[in-house]
Amino acid sequence: MAHAITAEMTKSIEDTLDVVAKSLHDASDRTVDLSEEASEVLVGAAEEVVRVAEQLRKHAIDATKDAARRGAEEVQQHPIASLAAALAAVATLVGVIAATRHRNHERPAG
Image (cartoon, rainbow, N blue to C red; front, side, top):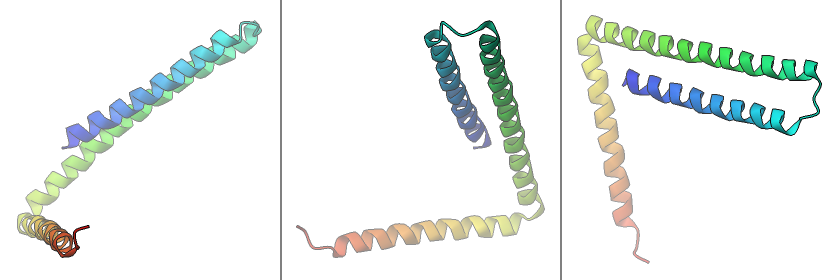
């Protein structure tokens, strides 16, 4: 599960980077008359965005791994409590599903 979350976050960051890079590229294409200094600033900004996005991606991966590791440690240290919590979650989910079905059957057709 942690891998799926990490992959999803990485994909989201990559998609955001693609949008930013495309926007910066489009802006530079439309501003042919930019001075050399302005062009350098634009390139520097694009490089900084890529650097920050890479740091965010690494941080997200590390945070996800850390959370998964802590979760596994908690389960190992407190297996009975973890089992009880999991069973309570399942019972709650079953209750919600049953209540939803009951409510749907009570509604008049129409």
